[in-house]
Length: 144
Image (tube, rainbow, N blue to C red; front, side):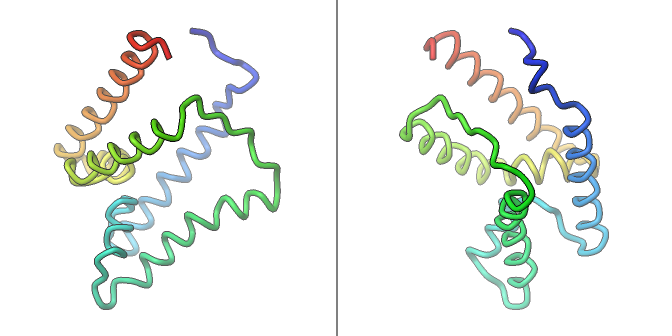
């Protein structure tokens, strides 16, 4: 394995991480809510009176952010080395894992770990371990 130094962006990656951390901290401090995407979206699928507007605004922001990016720069080249079947299966597995794990990577990995939640630590370790195992199996056993 080698590092593509042309694509290595530690400062912009650090800035993005800081912005995500600040946004998650502000969200919990100002709203008392965890910024886990699966929980926010799940609340829209089973709406509760008085709890829909902020969720809709949150999801709208997720959709609008790339559009704002496009207004100021070019869309980066996208490359997915998988077929549609693999992408759909992976998405379904992530959805099942999110339900089974009681949250997603943003809820557990960003928000839960910052609150020192043991449950989130266990979930994040499981997410990462399965990611490592999946990459190993797909690249080295299946040769993809």
